[in-house]
Image (cartoon, rainbow, N blue to C red):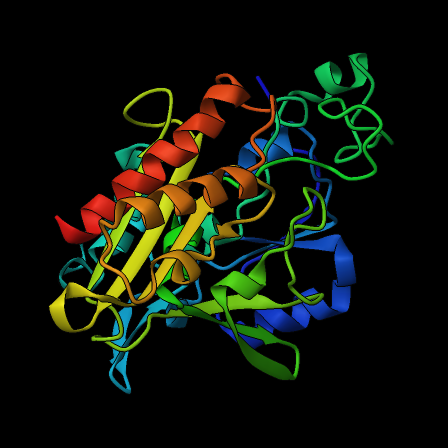
Length: 327
């Protein structure tokens, strides 16, 4: 049986108290939301924090509300609640679909939207027991100095596996971040860095408190597609988030397409460049966007299935997402 390492535990009741604890401990404290990813990682000794700050008592970070014509989702809202919420299903069905695709019913009931957005990058070398990692020579994301996936690489290629990040980035959603004595709001797309180790732009001690969806009417349609080995439970091999705003005669006024699980960060495509001012089923424009998507995606042999096949699926799923926008 795998056991947790020793650490101090705190369960503050307010965001302010949580940010104070994170500030006082610097980089030696970690936040616990649903724990569906953190707890197994602690058991594998991927993290060894001095203090774990549980947020389960911070009720202000739960639920969905409307403010200034926008839906605001607390970061501690469960994935199941996001998937089932009537307002989200009506206005932002792609987000509801992405949340519903994660894990199993038990995991979605426990896991949170904020936790999925800040999900650690994954790799078949890194996500193993400590003894397994040490036996083969630890990788640079663990305690080693080299990448076992791309030999000679000076950076880590672990992949972003969040399902909600691509669709929220495509929608232009924003995140509210609070730290001790400070607060800021950033676009979802600005939260990620294309580096398997330093994959978030969070400042030390920051807590993600809310997700702010765009005003209803910014987009006409949204779509989410996910590729994985099995129809449930598995992490994505690829996901695609997309949104479109039509003008007269169904001409594309604005379009956004973001790929997930094919890099260390969600990959935003230049969809507006290829499809802006055109109909979304323009064959030449779609083919150009597919080629662009394949260039942006960098699937590697650090997860399930052949990376060559996954790169081909980037083109297939990009086209399917566009079709879904006009279905």
